Length: 401
Image (cartoon, rainbow, N blue to C red; front, side, top):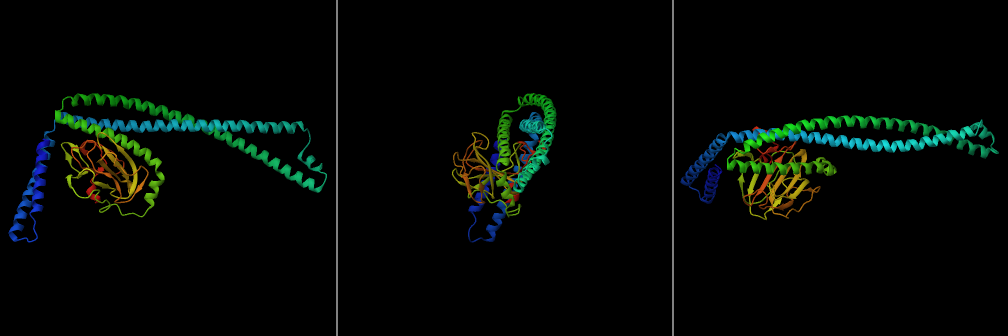
């Protein structure tokens, strides 16, 4: 099925190339008619390719459909587990922070309480002596004024000490309350995670049974999708960490006057070559969700718009050598399959539109030199299958070019 589809695409490209080569400076009516005939022929081939795509979808085995449906459910469970793990992590962090604050406040409270106790002992040991007696023993007016300010400061310090003791006592009680609340949330989140983990194990077991029934071609496709999903999960985690790490850079980016997000927002990320895969169609059951530019290895790759670099890496599978950039309004652009070691930007760096970020190549899950250009919007979900089987945040880059 793949070979038939590729054959049609190749024939279409050859026909287009032949058409462009036959255009001359002096065009006669006959030549115009010939070009129109060729154009009609190309349009017919495109229609055939679309029909073939529909046939491929219809011929997809029931096992593959079940695999895709179960994968969507598994993704949902894994997403829920991710949320619960985040809640668990947040609860643990709050417990640690509250415990630390409790210990600090308790230590300070004990010190102040001891100071106040010593003050009470000193007052008791002084017997009936009062602040007034202390002032009246002054030997001169200067001594009286000096003693007056000293007494005032001592009284003020005593009052402030009592206030601090009450304040820290309230903080200690609040910290204890937060610890108990966080522990309860932690308990609920852990119980929920265990329940969903059981469901996840069951769905994975069910999916494995259907995977065993797949054709060799479908198994290859499933393997490729799983590799991409694993890579995307890793990249998503890196970006989540980067969002907090580069918060300042992202705020500065969003505060800058910029080109409205729409047609013309993105520039073509490479010069030359041709589009070998259009942006938004399901191919052999797999949702591509990107534009592939067939260019030779070493071709400069440019940032399609100004943004902050969120993640870069050199993977052996999936995207290979890649760069992810965050733009205004939360859009993300992905640049994949670059030449290993060619990345010339760093995470956290703000790049200009048209700035070189790496060189194209043939790394990762790639069958020839090209640039994989992908755009996503929040919440940046990656499904791997056609959108009928779950949410996918990849959008057509052409709509912004």
